[in-house]
Image (cartoon, rainbow, N blue to C red):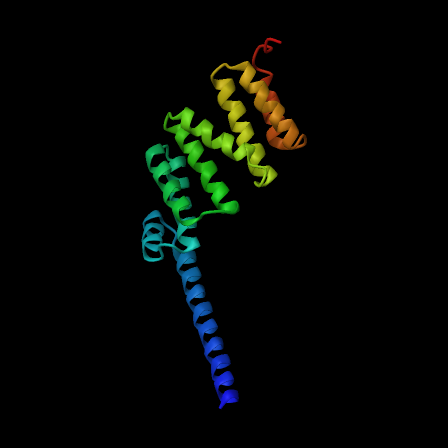
Length: 180
């Protein structure tokens, strides 16, 4: 009886795993089939809570950002962040959210988010350097040489050979020297 119970448990576990993998494959196929913004919205609504729904929200937000629809982009990245909590996709959504806020004219809020990304030692170097570059860019746009130099120095500490560091140095060079 015990052996039959163990065999039934193994079969049930195998069946459960098979069903879960089939459902995951179906969600993946549905995501791959979503090509337009409307299809992505429908996919995200039908699969809310799934990581691919967060990726779909990010794609929708990216399209809005590219089209210059800052408010829609901010909302899209916020929806993505409610689904994707951590990892590289979350960092990507946070970066997009901050840049959409810059586009929306909310530089102070964007600066806080970018500082959080740049200062987070648990993030990938690429994320940290891009965030520090955008902070440098915002400081240059504001004409603040002291802040621009601070963020350029931070970039040098994170990764001296990053293309973002090189771009930041070129931006920094456009400002007058910061007072000592």
